[in-house]
Length: 283
Image (tube, rainbow, N blue to C red; front, side, top):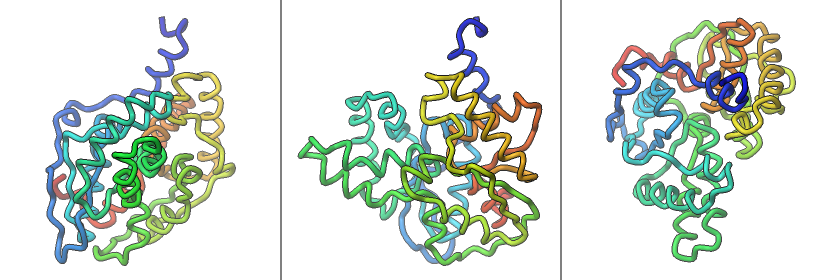
């Protein structure tokens, strides 16, 4: 069946093995700031991130807390509507976006660790362009949305960083670099880690083939892009790859596995968390 159905085969190749513990782990709804409280940060746990990458969410909470943020991460807020926007289903996306706006309205900032989600959430003003009742609330919400790398690059670090001796290649997620114009900030946050060597792959601007739901709708073309991206990343000689979007992580990991390579793919926040020492704490 998988041989005859390319889209099903693509879905099977992309889906990682999720440990049972990851399906039952939960974040605390409110995590207090360590030391002096800077602000109240709302955190979107997301749908793909929550299911496949709980450790990324847990690391985000630990780092934000260590940097002086009270973290509000409501379990009831799940999808931002990005996948519906990618698929052209705006009506469904609007309903999800309303729930998102209402849930985080009393937060000073809204932090996102998934580039695709952040791109859509920053564009809520446009999404609600024809809704007079929600347009202003949507614009105010979008103005508070920051990728985690933006926040960490802007802030003066509070938590001490310990050395992480690792050579990493940074992958620019399209929804972060192109849609949001966020390129320097992840690099700034990563190079603040002592001992970390950051290397750049060729053709950084080319998509890995994930592109929202593109790798499910056009699996053959997406696979070609993914292999090209994986080869460029491998050519850097890095010990690991870092990427700020779960779709990219799934796509690149699938291509590396298909090539017989077992290079780990981390979110930048996981390495920052390791440097601060949070990986040994509770999440």
